[in-house]
Structures are given as C-alpha cells and as structure tokens.
Image 1 (cartoon, rainbow, N blue to C red):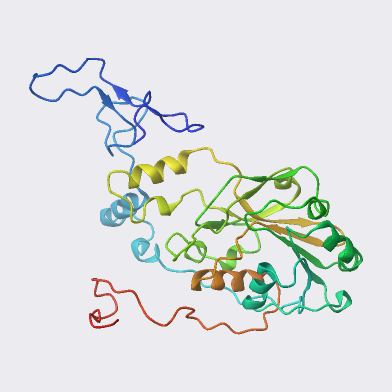
Image 2: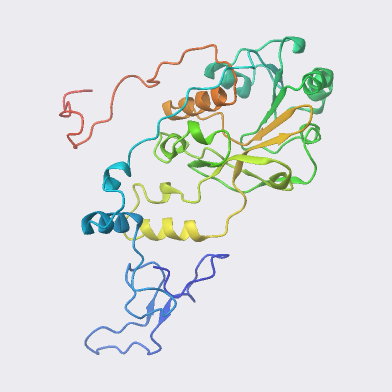
Length: 336
C-alpha cells in the first residue's frame, strides 16, 4: 500500500512513508521502526489513517461473492475468464494502397509483410499510407495524389515509430498536436470505438514477447486529443515491471506506475472530416513477432483494409521453450 505517499504527480522519495519519530538506539532489544517506506506491505494496521486496513483485489471480491452464495450470477467465477465472441471483420473497402515515403524502407517492407498491396497509381486506390519521417521532397512530389484520395473521401494513414515527425507530414494534420514521451508494452482500445469488438486485452499485451516489447515509444497529445477520436492508447499498467522481477519490488513497481500521472499515451487517433478520414499512429511497426503480426492483421482488417498475403499462425522456428510445468506434455530434455 502507498503508506505515507499520496502525491502521484511525482515519484516517491526518502521523505515519503511513515516515520515513527524516535531515533534508533544501538543495543536496545526489539523492533525499532524509524521509517516505513511506501509499498512495502499490503496491510495498514493504523499506520496511515488515510488508507484502509487493506485494499482487496477484484478476485477477492469475486471469490467472496461466489463463496457466500449471494452472487446474482452463480456462474460469476466461471464467466469471469470467458473470452468474448468476436464479430466477423467488415467488408474490405480499401483494396490497394498508395505509399508516401521510402518505398524500400522499413515501413513499406513491414506493411507488405503484413499483407498490404501497393500501387503506384493513386487513382487506383482510396488509401494512402504516409511515413511520418517522409521528407518535404517526398510529400511535395506526391501532394497531388494525396489530395486526390482526400477529395474522393479516402483514408490517409500517417505512421510513426520512435522518430520525430517531419514538418512536411505534420502540415497534413490539424494544428496544435504534439508527441509525448510515453512508452508502453500493452494497449487498450476505446471501449466505445470501432476497434473494441475485435480486440481483447490479451490481443494487445506485448509485455512477454521476445526482444523489444515497447509497442509504442512515444504518444500523441496536445490538441490532437480534442480534435480526433482516440482508438488505441497505452494501458495504464505496465506488466513488464512485474514479470521476471524480484519479489521485493515487483508489486510496488506495478502499483506505483499505475498511479503515476503519465504523459498522454494515445497510440492511434482518427480525424474525421466531411471529405476524408485521417489516422495517425505511433504503433511500432518494426517489432516482428507472432503477437504483433496478429495484432496488425486484426487492426488493418478491422479498419476495412484488404490483406493479400496469408501469414502462417506460427512465425517462429516451430520449437517451444523448455519449461518445468506439465501444461502441454512433458519437456523433451534431449531437444537441442
């Protein structure tokens, strides 16, 4: 619990916590508590009058309700973990895409790997992908094609990873927006937005994938949050602070991070106008794993973009990690 620490706009320091007020005396038997820092205990036996005795987790309330027999839903414990049924994807209306940026660069290559098909003729499509790092020359050379798609009511998708946006690309967006210093290993959808039916939280969880786990390395903020609709954003909890971390700090790290006031973590914003739709994202398209490929294919399909390449469900070499839990059969100790 956050004993003696209630200002989440800053990190706790040595002045936070509970202080007994008595100095330590060498040689005196028994406990001599001088300072109890925040997040070192799950109980509060009167140490901090602003906090309860303990803070139960949702599972505590669920189990209490189920075992007491007073739950209105007798299947509460069972249904708690049941995945929702996902609707079929809407019909694709964006069959091919026009690309603005380095056609041999990482973004173009990543989109092709996911299944996007490109065309060099803007009149053949109503979809444009724009690399947020596109130079003024790249944008200027393709401005007429971009305008054609916008006037035809098409979709413009501007993509960034961890680099700043060039002024040429920023001029295509509403004024007053900014990039924020925010990283995240998992996302959450706008519950009332168009992506919510197609994603569950496990689909947006990248805290345990191999290699780079920061699905966003910067967020979107400023006036963009008012001018557009946030479709995806950073989750408020970072479970990478808990996984494979020493017991003496894992819980404290997660709880503390959850309470801290953080910069905007908007990762995908949609701007609607009478003539077109513009998407702006900071989702890192460079991370390649089974989880991220599945995420991108779901995202593009939900946004009605046709995918032309079938991806095998298993993107690794077909092997599994050894473990000592008999969840899917015994471990092959002789496997090399």
